[in-house]
Every structure is written in C-alpha cells, then in structure tokens.
Length: 322
Ligand code: NAP
Image (tube, rainbow, N blue to C red; front, side, top):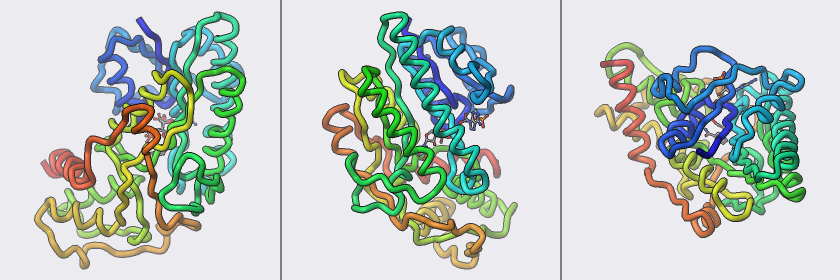
C-alpha cells in the first residue's frame, strides 16, 4: 500500500487530496494542528487515514513524523494561504510557508538517503511568486518577483524545491493559480461572494463590501488542482508546472455569474467598494499558461468558470439559505 504524507490536510486542497488518495488505496498520514477539521469530516474515521497532531514549527516534530511514516509521496500544502493574512504577519508567513517547507524537504531527503527508497515531494507553489508579472500569460520561466510577504515566502520554498531536486530528490512545484470550491473559507473573495449572494437571496443579508472589482484572476476548480499535484508526483521526472485554466475573469464577472445564479441581473445597489479590502500591492491580472502540465502530465481543467461559480452558489444556497 503506497504511503502519502500531507501537511495542511485540513485545508481545502488537503481534504480533497486525502479523499483522492484514500480512494486509490493509499495509506494517508496528515499533519493537523486543531482537533476539529470540518473539511475532513466526510472521511470520518477512515481506516487508512492517520492524523498527527503536530506543531510544524516545533524543533524535530515534523522531522519525526516524516521518519516515522516513511512516505512514498509527500504533499507540502500547509501555509498561511492568503495574501491579506501574510501582510498581517509577514514573519510568521515566512516561517510557515518558507522554513517549514525547507525542513520538510530536508527530512524527505534524509529518509530517502537512509532507507534507499525514493521519496517524491510536491509543493503547492503559487502564481503569487510572479507578483506584478513580467508577462501575460505566465509560464514556468516567468521572472519570480513577488509583491507580497505571501508571494515571497512561496518563492523561497519554490526555489528550495529546485535546490533539493538538484540534490537527487524527486521534488516538484505545482504553481497553482486561484482554485475554489465550497470548502474555501469566507476570508477569500470568491466564497465571500457566493455565501453573501446566497444569504442576500434568502433575505438574510443586505449587501457585500469588497475591494478592487477590476482585479483579474484565473479561477479553477480545486479538485482539478489536486489531481495535478498527484500527476506531478507520479511523473517520471520532477519539475515545475503551472496549473491554471488559461482564462481570466474580473471580480465583477464573478459577481455577475453569482448573482445571475439566484436571478439577480443588476447587483450595483448590493455591492459597495470598501478601500479597506483593496490590497496594498495587487497584481492586476494573473493568467497562467498550463501547456506544460497538459503536455507532460496530461492535465487539463475539467470545470469552467460558470460551472465553478454555479457549484459554489448552489452549495451556499443549501448551506446558508436552505
Ligand atoms: P487552506 O484551505 O488555507 O489550507 C491551509 C492549510 O495549512 C490548513 O490545513 C491549515 O491548518 C494549515 N496551516 C496554516 N497555518 C498553519 C500553521 N501555522 N501550522 C500548521 N498548519 C498550518 O489552503 P488551500 O486553499 O487548501 O491551499 C493549499 C496550498 O496551496 C497552500 O499552500 C496554498 O498557499 C497553496 N495555494 C493555494 C491556492 C488556492 O487558490 N487555493 C493558490 C495558490 C497556492 P488549519 O486548518 O489548522 O488552519
């Protein structure tokens, strides 16, 4: 039975990834820091799932779990995952998103050397490493020049993955563009919109305050992005892969689609722009070219923008307004 270790298993991607690996017969170890993991509740007490309650920043704790579980595949997902949160605590963001990943790589490398069995590592890198991108669409070789503490922390981890690859570890970066699902918390703009739209349509909320409505993002369906991580782990050679839909939309487009789903065509009186929600430095457009992942991994997104928004709104109608 292949063994996988996931950091960040309680998050959006970690929970989808765990479900996918368990369905394929993996033994899955997940590192958690809280005892209540809403996203994992669907798995219940799956016999092949073991959760390890570990402080990733405690000396030797992470290293001990890697040595104990001796995984075939390691998925590095734990992160302070929002740009906004990274501005609130840039130092902690560097520690969790950067240093912890380096320690994970070192630990995986150590297990590989000691045991002689190969360990494959996939890191959840981010489009934010490109900051105000030098070119559009972005490809794997686009200049790395982050514009937030989040992007800088991801860039450090991303580059260190390359360092360990050079040292013989099968270590890959999936450079993930925004991907959403009903498991996104409301601290992210997409879920804030779909949850608010559901509550507005049920008469439970009167309006939404948002930041820059013109920001363009390349939004995909989270389970598709988790599938790309697994394909990267299974590839003959480790590498870096952009994972994106190649289609971008504005926040206003997202609002159009979400409100249309509940039969509201004119949302102008329901949405207010609050400068508090505008990011200090915001990449105007993120758009990824995933041709390499398509060519080398056989990966392609399966859910388009309209379907993604509809799925999230429908979930929230049931969840908040049902
Ligand atoms: P998420 O839902 O925010 O999940 C983040 C995970 O990291 C959670 O399990 C969280 O644990 C854990 N975590 C956060 N801070 C931690 C800490 N100090 N110590 C230990 N664990 C900590 O993120 P996601 O959307 O699944 O994203 C997965 C990965 O992909 C992240 O690395 C993210 O940066 C990257 N990524 C995501 C996107 C996207 O659009 N979703 C785009 C690019 C890159 P708790 O449950 O205990 O908080």
